[in-house]
Length: 326
Image (cartoon, rainbow, N blue to C red; front, side, top):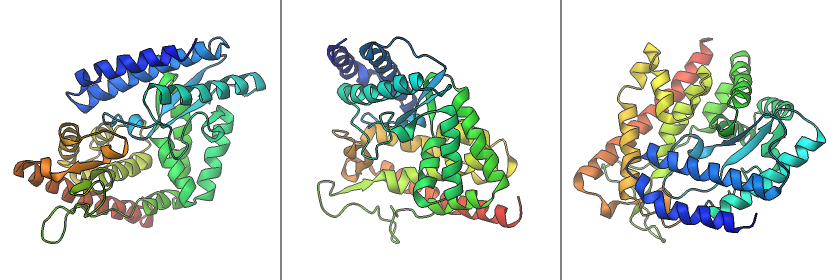
């Protein structure tokens, strides 16, 4: 097996991706298909046979949440069930090949090294358990960030159960040690303003994205971080922000908090899909307001304001709940 296999996948991806750009879920289903093809090619290329035990190859970040745009970098990891040298060697070799293969197919290496080629993200189930407990006990800014990344993990090849069992550990730990959920809240308490006091959209004033707004930090993250925080508190397995909202709204208190928020988030996803020029992964975070109609600008302002409101209310709700022993 040569790199020719990856080139064929890349050519197929580039040829067909536009057909899936009708909505974000269809686009992410397409990304899943490409990644599964890449996994199959990587297994063939390392020439070590099929995986020797149960495993999960998961993706996280926007891919884990089914919220990727047209362009996306890598965020993935491996969990394998049985710990021994043979399995370690197999999956670590596979992890390195997966990272190289995805890069060849058109998903750039993750600058934060959240990839199966990194031993931190390629471990046996028991080693993952030890690592998660270590992160939860440390409660540093970095380890809390890693826990948030892991909580967005979605199985793409293998078994869901390994991820579910590890997420159960996080859920149970934060129920027993309420300081953990507070640390989650503190880790995401800061947001970037997107609308000024006069109701104007706050755009980049200089640089290559002059005239654009960074919707990742001003619009997406207030929703994503708030809903993930509630998902951790409630012990949900769902990873997409919309699916998490559906589950959370089964709770009457949270239903009032989240009223109308799913519609705003779905509108944000669609606005990004229709309006953003995504030449590079970095470009996918910026929306040029000059390309928006007056109606779209008004919608974006409302989405940003509602996201900021949700974020503030969620942080307060979680901290108040801990203070009241809820």
